Length: 85
Image (cartoon, rainbow, N blue to C red):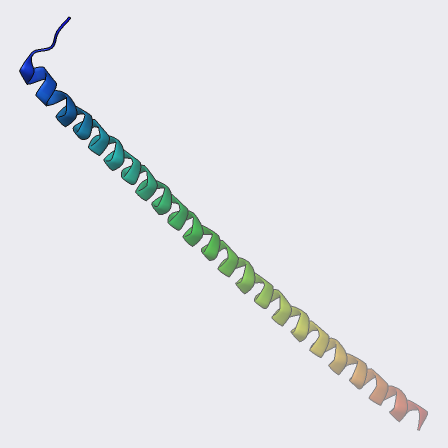
């Protein structure tokens, strides 16, 4: 089977066009993956921020509790010293 001159001339053009489409599809896929990774990074960063703030709040509560306990112990020791003297 022989090809006509017009089909021989169009074959490299069609091949180049197919390669261009494949390249554009690949670039679009990479852009999509990068955008999904960026969104995932933002979500992870927000979650880490929430965890850090919760840990800070817990640390403040522990510090306040220890300070209250220290005040109570100090008051009890003072009362004991006053009682003994």
